[in-house]
Image (cartoon, rainbow, N blue to C red; front, top):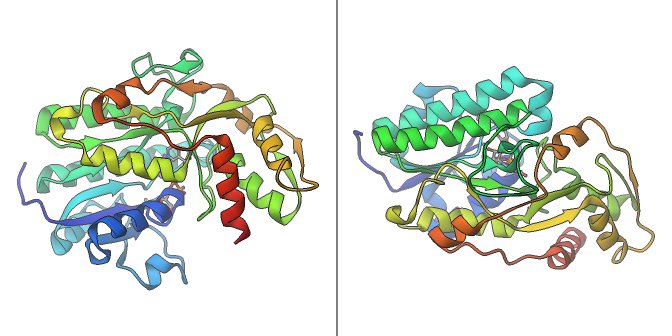
Length: 317
Ligand SMILES: NC(=O)c1ccc[n+]([C@@H]2O[C@H](COP(=O)([O-])OP(=O)(O)OC[C@H]3O[C@@H](n4cnc5c(N)ncnc54)[C@H](O)[C@@H]3O)[C@@H](O)[C@H]2O)c1
């Protein structure tokens, strides 16, 4: 590796669902001016674009990333830019180009300038042959292009660590539930959309069946996991560095609808599975996160009731 580790942080894909929360958390922790939000698009009126430090940057443009890293004294990249599962299966070529190509851009930039990298993996790395509760180490045979790009990301994390000493870490996020921003074209979007529909229309047409059980997590837990993983000493990080299993809450779409019905008078939910049911069916019900607990002390704080209460309270404010 060459170059010097700067103090600033670059977040790619910062205008997405996770970026919305992660940029704020990083600015609280490291100071507003130390965190540069970036995305391929601009949203006028968005607080990151209007108030904070923002650059328009495609993760497919290595020269532009190189310039930003040198110009801003970047030492760490949180690489969130990606095409998610539902959108990715509609456009697999774009999904591969952005998810694999973008990660190569970030890793090559990290190699040249000695950067640390955080880049999420996903429960989509698992295929139908994974056990119902997926262990950390199991054959990864995803059926979706999106899942395959995430497996490639995990493999690259290990390769760049072993060959070049690039410290890239990641978490296999479950479906994430948050109130600050809309979900971004993933298969677990129903677990976010249902809250908005319950409060605005009193009804939701759910695109997976009531028995569909998936690993999920409230965003506050996911952000805390991300910061804790990046704070962990390098010698505590083991072979799961590219994608640690972290367990949050495992619930069915029916259980989520029931929990909302108990709190929102008159709420109804109809289940109308579409093409996304197939992706959901190929993923495990829950994950075993004992390796994350052992390596960097992970534990979740939110259960289903606490998450539903918090979502409804926040969205009603
Ligand atoms: N949200 C979830 O439930 C979830 C679950 C598992 C893993 N993940 C992973 O977490 C990361 C972030 O997910 P998210 O939910 O915030 O996604 P999102 O779709 O909400 O946001 C992704 C952002 O990337 C940007 N982007 C797309 N192409 C780009 C490019 N070429 N250059 C720069 N930016 C580009 C988009 O404009 C968007 O703002 C992704 O790697 C995703 O695979 C998310």
